[in-house]
Length: 149
Image 1 (cartoon, rainbow, N blue to C red):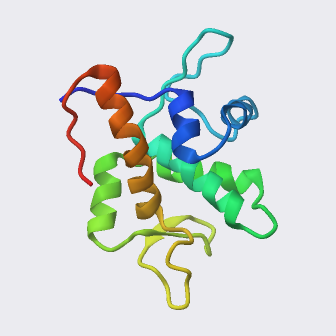
Image 2: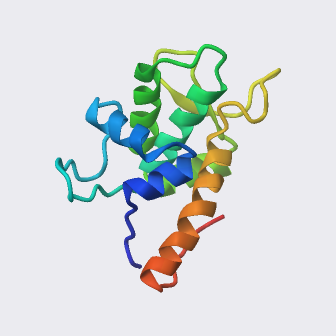
């Protein structure tokens, strides 16, 4: 199977945020691409879990009434980015679809009683990210890519 990585432009589109914000978050150390290149003209590459981590952090920052702090975005990014796609999909198949932010250590857990079903829903963000990235990858690489949706 072909391994596909995504650009920062892809990340920005999938996360629903400006490219400049992705660039600033990288520069400030809140998020990190697969390759940590610096300078104009060097492309950063991202994995699907990394893109999901950026998108989840961006969503939490947009949703929270007081805009969650960037250190929370960084924690969410690292937690999700450190997982593989297989680990994410296994958690989802076990019903662990939501980010459990109420403890010192983040974890994926089933939705809790009284929770907004969309808030902290990593599985939903994962599918939104794939809906943006898969067509881009198919067009870019003119290849058949296996994706579990």
